[in-house]
Image 1 (cartoon, rainbow, N blue to C red):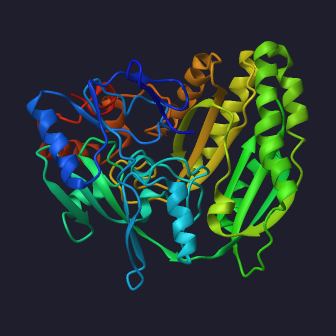
Image 2: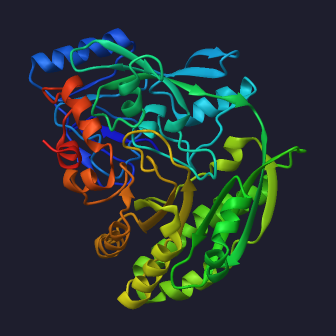
Amino acid sequence: MSSTASGKNGTWRNWGGTVAARPAREVTPASVEELAGAIRRAAEDGLKVKPVGSGHSFTSIAATDGVMIRPHLLTGIRSVDREAMTVTVEAGTPLKRLNVALAREGLSLTNMGDIMEQTVSGATGTGTHGTGRDSASIAAQIKGLELVTADGSVLTCSEKENPEVFAAARIGLGALGVVTAITFAVEPVFLLTAREEPMPLGRVLAEFDELWAENEHFEFYWFPHTGSTNTKRNNRSAGPEQPVGRLAGWFEDEFLSNGVFQAVQWAGRAVPAAIPGIARISSTALSARTYTDIPYKVFTSPRRVRFVEMEYAVPREALVETLRELKAMIEGSGLRVSFPVEVRTAPADDITLSTASGRDSAYIAVHMAKGTAYQRYFTAAERIFTAHEGRPHWGKVHTRDAEYFAEVYPRFGEFTALRDRLDPDRLFQNDYLRRVLGA
């Protein structure tokens, strides 16, 4: 699921197929010193600089026609501090490798997203998150950062050292410098019991506050054109471990969630009118199940069906109303939506441009299969989300600009002022940052 850069014409494409770029040159530094040198050379040659991870952003946040930094040699764990309960990891390390390495050490992150193909710097820099009542995004678990700034100098930051940089750079959008290492808070590995079960949408919305309050991690998927959802509750458990059996796991996670789901997408593209009927059948295909395992095996699952996604964070108290409006819009529009709508939550955090900055949030994600016309659906959904002061995920499709963000992020000016200080000549600029942060 990594990004592809074909050597023939040097074109880089993202995972969702929504962005292509042709950098003037690609650099794969093997050390912080090499990276700093590449940044200085780019500035001398008048070229912009962009680091790119695994290409899992649907926006053009990583695209550049200048110097593309590939971080895949900057990987691995630098150090584990068992007294402080932190781990310092190189920025290009895939989350998958971090999770496996931590488990070997008897450690774990507190919370994570639902896939682990991304690099740690790409995931945190765009605000990747899972769902949590008390535990927040991956970036909110950062205790320290090392980044190379526009003049090629190495800057370290934490709550005590350069705290104003730390407040912003945990979700830095690639605008403040190139992150080279991240120190995460970790804890002794623990067990989670996952309880997955179908539930009528009406009940989920009526009981949402209780479902959220009673579970450490609650999320649900609503199948448009139906009144059905699949809910997932993850809570800490004393054990024993009861992982999903290999056959059951293959059937649920590979055959149903990837194989059959892919066939459903193909059928829906061939005969859009059949989508509501297919949705009613597929919404009943997943049965209830309970299993207990270590965190990354519960939080994450394979996603092999390629899609395009828009996700907005709305104030948590606005979730039910927003979702009702989304449902009414789909029903009244004649749209045929074959992908479930995903709903998750996050507590308020203190990161300048986090989608949960300063407010308890609920996330609503809409998807369409790769290659289908998503614009009409996403435009109508975005109209609903923005009416509730929604904040779009930085790595997912949206049409918002700096003027909008200045309204929905109280600390927006704090971020742009820091950028003026750290990158006055806009070495890390691209079209996306020009739109979302202003020129």
